[in-house]
Length: 229
Image (tube, rainbow, N blue to C red; front, side, top):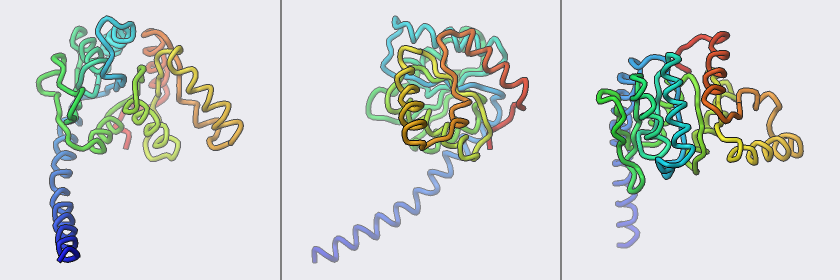
């Protein structure tokens, strides 16, 4: 009896998995339809836990404002912390302010600086990540946690393997990122040769909003603005 119940539950799970395809497809279709209309944009990543009085919140806000003044829109994960700062800067500059929200049991809630028609909700991280990569002309990566690192390394991997077009990846905060970059160069690259020197060419380490905008502008003097795949 126990064995029969086990197999019955397994078959039910397989059926549920099959029907989930339609929900996943729906998220992709809705995301593609809305994101294809936003124009050239830059994604800003960082911790949801960063408070408004923190220097990196204020810096993310200034970076977003400058990005919009330079003619780009801003995409964030739609939540609090650095995400809120990015949308706030875009909103104050009257620029495009997009929020790709994810349903989480903690931390995540919509911030009030997202354009009303540019707030998208996702149940699946992988669908949301596709939207970031496909419709971003650059990644600005502020100090953050595992989610921020996940977005960073996925972008590097996709560029490294030629699955997407190249775009600049800008790490903001030398006091936060220098240790990671030193480890990648000294250990991953030189000691173990697990990556190639050219894999790091598109990663920039900066501390100011001026540097961010300069890198974006210099890159797109050479490359065409377009979706990444």
